[in-house]
Image (tube, rainbow, N blue to C red):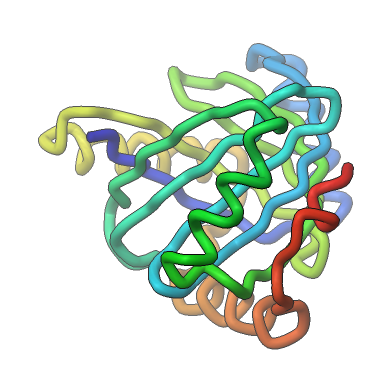
Length: 185
């Protein structure tokens, strides 16, 4: 089991560019990608993510809520050719409606953490600082390290309540029945 420890900041375009310049100077660039994510809430959280130019799809299950220090996460990757079978399977399990968003992401390493500069449809510019660990005992330490990194980037943490409100609004505006034709990118 992997624990995802993550904190976010909603930023202006100026803050976004300031962080990018800082990370280009002090961090390690990991890459840029364009993603399309399908976010299911029922019967529980499930995300299907496509990355432009990549042959596979990534399916993520997360448990816990945004106010938790960490969320349990499992990921599975499979070929796009398996998508029709997978969609039939999850539809039978009750995954019928989802929200769909696109993201442009610039990823960096800083202080042993991953820092992602995102331009997310509906949300705007979001900076995420995260770490993964299999050791639940490290969650508190990683949380402190993440908050310190946000502070060094001169960013205010986005509250869990505000992020949940953003997610709720996303679902209210964009929930749709999913079909295979949606998975073109």
